[in-house]
Amino acid sequence: MAKPIRIRSRRRDGGVDVMVLMLHPMESGLRKDANGRQIPPHYIVAATVTVDDRVVLDAELGIAVSRDPLLQFRLEDAPVGALIRVHWRDNHGEQQQAEARLA
Amino acid sequence: MSAVSTFAVPHASRRACAIAPERRLFMQSAAWLALAGCGLEGPAFAEMLPPAYSMDDALAAIAKPARESEHVQLRLPERIEDGAMVPVTVTTDLTDVDALYVLADMNPMPIAAQFRLSAGMAPRIAVRIKLAGSGRVYGAALRGDGLHWTAKAADVVVGGCS
View: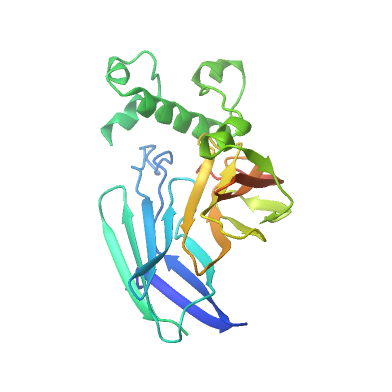
C-alpha cells in the first residue's frame, strides 16, 4: 500500500529543497465514469506544512490542482534533522498526515 | 453531492433556486468547464456560460494595487500535451512575500491554487494544475504593497476537464 504522503528533502546551497507528493484523486466532480455517471468531487482543500511545529506553508488547493498533488518548495532557514510535517484535509473531511526529518 | 445532477439545466430546476447563489455560480462554472474542456462550444451553450470574469478583477480581488511585474517569474511548458497535469513554478525576487498564487483565465475559477508563506520559506512554489484549454496562466506574489503578477500563454493540446 503506497504511503499517502511522501516527503523528500535535499540540502543545497544553504537551504533545503522539499518535494511533497500527496496521493489523492483530486476529482473535480465533472468527470463521468464508463457508465456515464458523474464521478463525485473528491479533492484536497487545504494542506499545511510545519517545521519543528512552526507553520511554514499553508496551501489552499482545489479542483484545478492535478491528481496526486506534487508541491515543491524551498526552506532557507531549517536545521538539519528538523521535523517536517505535512497535513492535508479534503472536501469529504478526510485527513492525512506524515512527517520526516529534513536533510 | 446529489446536487450535481442539476448541472444539466441549472436555471430551470427548482432545486437550483434553492441553492445559494455562490454555489449556483460554482455549478454553472463547473458545467462550463466540462463543456469547454470537452471542445463543445457555440451559441447553443451560451446560456450555460458563467458570468464572464475579467482577470484584472480577479487579481484586484486578491489585493490592490495589482500590477504586472518583471520581478515575478512563471515557468510553464511551452506546449502542453495533457491539460490535466501542467507543472507550473512561480518565483519572485521580491522580499517579504506573504503569499503566492497560480491563476488561469481559461478555467471557470480564476485561482487554481494559493500558498501562504512564512518567513524562512523561499518565495518559490511548484505545483501541477489542470487547464481547461489554451489561455493565459498567471503567477502572482502578494506583499504589503499589493499584488505583483506575471502571465504566460499556455498552449494546451488536450484540455484537462476529463
